[in-house]
Image (tube, rainbow, N blue to C red):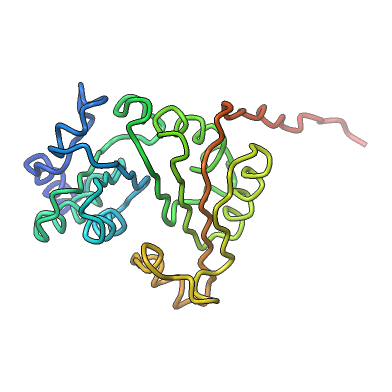
Length: 230
């Protein structure tokens, strides 16, 4: 690990708005924030641009950026402290362990912004049913999930999941900039979004809710083991 990363990892241990693998936090986020305001998660938050951006726009809500990379969390956490944003926190952990940190119904909303699309392994995509089932365990009924991505395959994949799982689709924009749809929360622009737009890529957006029925995990695809020789 480089010296810069080491310094950042050491720094976040002293930040009051960063929690690293906290024990006993389930159902107690209201105590951390000092209020019962609705909680929004930003998954794979990176530098926390959306967490801090949304927190500044919505002081009546609480926001938690989640990522495993502490050196990236450092940037968002430092900005939140500098901007006096007491309604944003950062949780360092793996996304597949959300139930270790949130009680059923404790989360009202989720944002997934420019995640790694994992094009080769579908089960690692953050809109794959195995992740949606995890979200279903911690979200309030009717809570909305937002996906913002430049990845055409991830966008199309998520559209298919929405259909197959009978999810409730609220918005589907092929390109938020094409028809002036980049307003409100969608106007918040991350570093990667600016870079992708400069390259001429479309920025896709989907907003949906999970059904009451349990999410069904599809069976694993069998590998082709046919080694017969013609």
